[in-house]
Image (cartoon, rainbow, N blue to C red; front, side, top):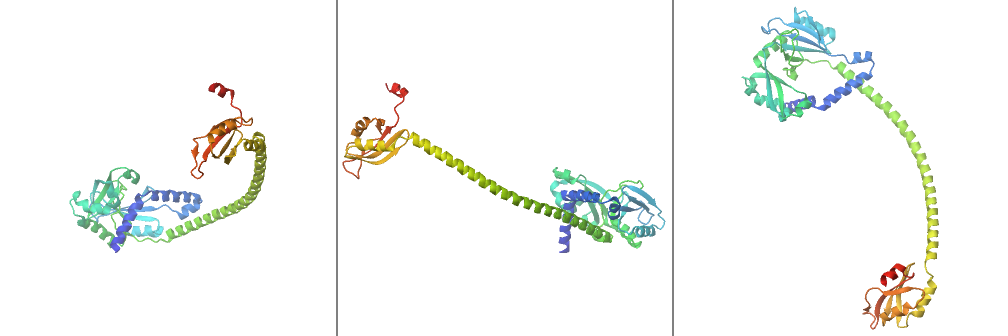
Length: 383
């Protein structure tokens, strides 16, 4: 269970190291730090320093060199009784902001550049463990290895292959150096490999030391910084929430007043609209009344001219024509009878005259009568 947990934890660490979330949090943390006064920023967020223990090419039993630096500014330290000097440096500094790095000399480890498919980036530890014997003359059980990506995570995501720099050291050689540190009563944070013989040497940038064997640091300052950060964020959030609550309350009052004014304005618009509609309707009715023919004379004329064997079922009247529908014993004789009227013009039968099966001897008809005289152009076209 522990192995599975560690595997998932390592996979999460690798994902976090390559993810944009880490870059965002670093940027966000830097911006938050800049909000603090410089004095408090230097006190709460001190830059980490490094104490380099550089092994000698002759072997772990030979003398070592010590370097102390912060942000690339290195200073040599006296190497006589170097273990005691390291203890003194840590005691003076409080061992809080200092990383102890044991640097293996050039040639003690193999450094290889390996091309792998981009899909292997998600589980590089296991992939390298199975593929390591193809690149170094050792089996994975005989060596200790660490790796780093040659390109940035963003650039690696855009390509089909990735370049991994792998550092491999035999387990026997690694144990010699770790045994020396144990005899001196020291534990370190990082075991890296030098890439040149300069002083201080440049390093590959990996950590060959397992996480469980790294130096245990006091987390008091870190926890304090996190607590202070949380408090600052909480106070900032409280201030923002209070300001937002006041603005929301003011906005609610304004919205309530505006809603009341809107209701009154809407009621006024509705009353104005109803008045306008009433005026338009009254004018329309008046205009329609003026345009429509008189109904009583038309009904009287129909009553006078329709024969007794004919009766009407429907009468439709508008400004332009009169439509009548009904039953008659001889519907075709109605057109000449209706044509003699002075009230309408040009009666015509709509559709075919058909017998009505429900009324034997009766024919069903529909006749159009125009209420306005035909236009002169129509008369000319007909002639």
